[in-house]
Image (cartoon, rainbow, N blue to C red; front, side, top):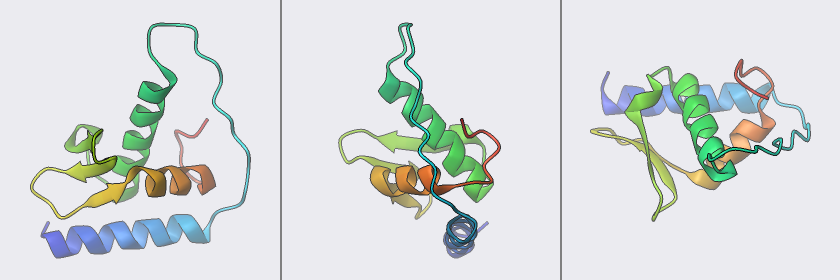
Length: 97
C-alpha cells in the first residue's frame, strides 16, 4: 500500500467514524495493578487507530515526546489528542469500553 493510499484510507476511516458518532461519556475505570492508566489509554488508542486504518496494532508506534502516533516507513502521523477525540466519539469500535 502506498503512502497516498494509506493516508486516503486513514482519512476515509476517520470520516466514517466521525459520521457515525454520538456523544457518550465513557470514563475509564480505576485499575488497581502495576499498569498505569496512561499505559492502558495508549494501548487502547493504539489498537483503535490500528483498527481504523486496518493495520496490525504492533505497526503503530507512539512518540511520547512529540505526543504523536505514527507508522514506521509511512506518512501517517496522528497527534495523540486527535486520536483520543476520535476514539471518545466512536460508536462502532468493537474494543470500546
